[in-house]
Length: 144
Length: 144
DNA sequence: AACAGATAGATTGCGTACAATCCAATTGTA
DNA sequence: TACAATTGGATTGTACGCAATCTATCTGTT
Image (cartoon, rainbow over all chains, first blue to last red; front, side):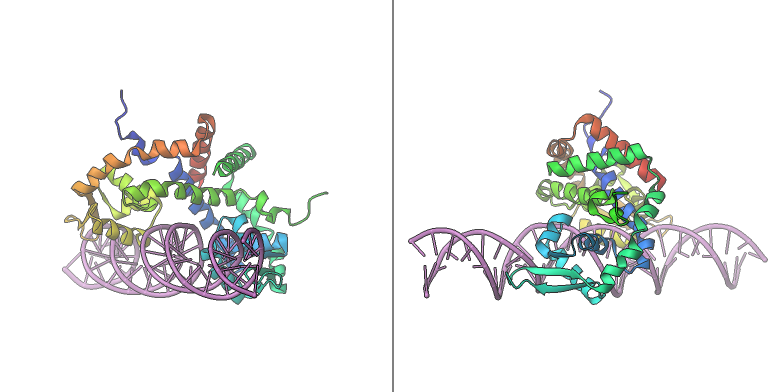
């Protein structure tokens, strides 16, 4: 028995730590690109949902992004201040708040669509590893 | 050409988003276990560094964890308040701050060492996927 | 119609993250 | 040995992330 009782507590033997660290580093990689279009990473993924859905409630956006109202409410207010989205209560159900794109928000899509490929080049994962990573992460998410 | 110009901006086609989401979900998985020993996830990985190194400067801890003084200073002060660590300026170089474990901090290791296996069971990744994920994430980190 | 329970967001509070800046201690160099 | 540049932490300000709680609205049941 070469391994001590506490081997499992070493940083190098963790799977979750590189996941956590990688996530942060990748988000940091986005920063210079996102700075140019005046978005943070979280604001960017919120805009992605809107670029795909045009109009969506806070509730449904939260389901897509795995974020709750405590995060989304101030985030969407910031996006509103920046002039990219509008927030309006649903007339059908006053509890529900519908988020829509403004002209500026829609136009931003044009500036944003080059970002994924630029990030792809930064990361320089080969196609197989990227595919594997995608597959494993989705499997993990499904289980949780 | 079936794909539109903006396909690359769809959430489902992202690699970074599941990385970001997975990381958060996994950290959340730790919470019930870490609550029992009065640590947050970030505090836990800081303690891991100390359990392995006994004594370390803030600078070096930051290099292990990819965190800067803006995060570590308040975090280590909290751990000090909780009685798990001590912070003392180095006598060799007064700029440097050495962090050491207290008796309680050292004792916490005994309560913590069951956590990795419990998390492992929660995630239920098979051995090959876990290995692949570990390999790819480390490759990614190396490139960044 | 009345009311209990459920639902959607908003708010509050705490703990990260991190860029930017500041300060004191140290080091390299003329 | 002065002194400019560097270094290690601390501080400040902004933006999440999320648990817990609150409020207004809606829904189902009687």
